[in-house]
Length: 155
Image 1 (cartoon, helix red, strand yellow):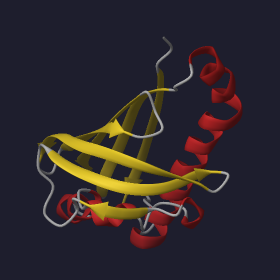
Image 2 (cartoon, one colour):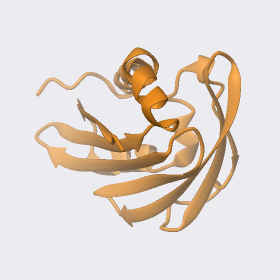
Image 3 (cartoon, one colour):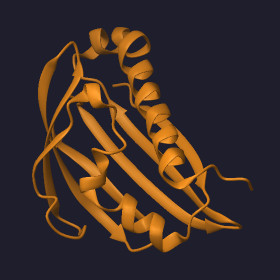
């Protein structure tokens, strides 16, 4: 059973409170997801984030195949972190930790995603060709979009 980890950090030149308000609002996920993914929230994003919140999405990650994705927000510490875990969707495991902290001149965002591909050895074969590059592409888009929205951190 192979579990992969994707680890990303990004600094933004905005106050902690503003960053938290944007990042912890599930409705904003559509804004920072590539359009071709057909990201659409079906339910659960109508209130402020809380532990136990179930959010249902439709995404089209590969070859126009629509996939229902259900996540649960399992942990929330305001202005510090939240965790979402896939309950149903394309991964055998998806555990995504979102950390945010104040730094000089802005905030540091950190994403740590532990995930497992379904289909055993076949999933492991397609991981380096399909899954990992797609995740890298999505997070590159997210980085660019956040910089477009909030500016480039100058340090």
